[in-house]
Amino acid sequence: MTPANRRCFVKWAAASGVAASSGLVARAKEQAAEHPVAVFAKHVQTLEFGELGRRLKSIGVQGIEATLRKGGQIEPAQLSQQLGRLCDALAKHDQRVVIAASDVNQVDAPSEAYLKTLAQHD
Image 1 (cartoon, one colour):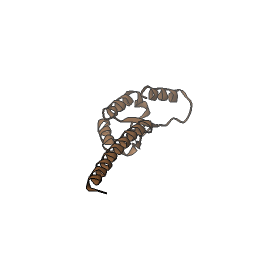
Image 2: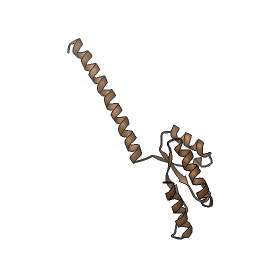
Image 3: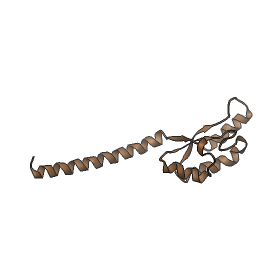
Image 4: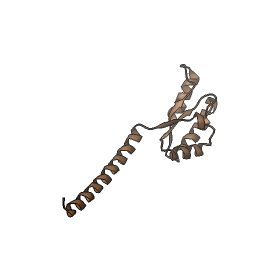
């Protein structure tokens, strides 16, 4: 291989690497939207909602499995008042509630109201 051919090959290889990596980044972003990565939030449930969103973003996930149950991040009795605040604070950091860990174990009026509240913040 002549020096000119080697230089051409090196330029081509570098350009191919850049093109391939940009395609991988785009595909990773598409997959994150289709299949978000969520962190179980019990160990960080005491953080202020905005701080939680900031920290989640810093580790590269898309959201949390929020503990929306007795003893959790949001108590069931406070769900209608607090869930919107949590969702808004997370959204400011491109995060969201992906999964809700709840105390819903039966079909009854309180469970139905709880699920309707969750559905409003989809």
